[in-house]
Structures are given as structure tokens and as C-alpha cells.
Length: 190
Image 1 (cartoon, rainbow, N blue to C red):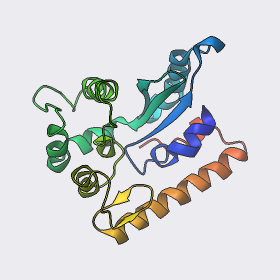
Image 2: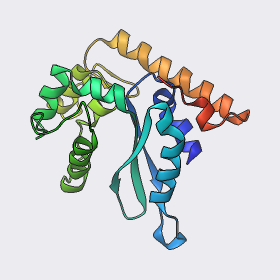
Image 3: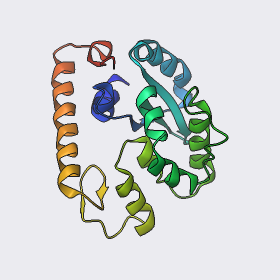
């Protein structure tokens, strides 16, 4: 699992963004207990303000969301983020994002389970710019100005710079990990 964290979550581990997701192959026949793996991972990450949460199970894989609790809470307090999420049945009067994110993550998980299409509001949870998340949803993934780590619908220069910084971070983390640094050492306390 550590290789997946480095490959897909380096910007979150470094404190550059509120969250990342990745898919991990999971096979119950191998007696792999994914819950034990997540618990072990959280014992390492939680003291640095980072958490791992299972968003969805598929037949042979599991979707894992790695996030910074404080950064996600701040993101969800933004009016522009709330407006996008409220249009996707998130009820901000019901959820208490300042104290406990478990309800909102549970709701996001239910959106993965109930929908036949991917819940594209995940972009908010991945710290993508709200205008790009909204642009993607409104345009059904088409008509973007350009595509990088995400599809960009506005402020291309800023988005490309951010994507470049995320790639630089990932490459630096991969190098450090290969040289023996642990996940705990690479996770920044913010």
C-alpha cells in the first residue's frame, strides 16, 4: 500500500492539497483484511493530521480516499464548494463539518454505491478548483480548455502550475521513498 500512497497521494502527504484517491486491488480469497491495513495506515498517518478512508468496494478492488482533516474541513466551509455539493444532495445544515467529517464521507461513499455514474463532485474532495469541478459537471467532461491532472475549464496558467507542482512533489517523494524514507517520515505534519 505504501507504493500507492507515494504514487497517488504525495501532494496530500506533503500538505499541498486536502485529498487524493487511489484504487487498491483487493481479493477476499487471499485473506487480506483491508480494514486492518487501513487501521495500520491510520495509526501512522493520523498523528500528522492525515486519514485514510474506504470510499467504495468493488468486486476486486477498493477505492481509498487519503485526506487532511483540517484542509478538507476548510475546503468544505467555502461557499463555492458548498453550492456545488448541495446540488449533489449534500445537506450542509445536516452535516457538522467542523467537528466530524464521517457523515460527509459516508454520504460521498453512498454516492459511489448508488450511482451508476461516477460522482464527479469528488473534485471538491481532491482540492480541484471549484470552477473546474463545476465546469466538468456542467459540460459532462467535455469542452475543457485543456486536460492535465484534471480537466481545466478556467485559469489554465494557474492550474498548469499547480499540476506541475504536484508532479514535482510526487517525483521527489518517489525518490525519497526509494532511498529508504518511510511513509511516516514523508508525511508532513501541518
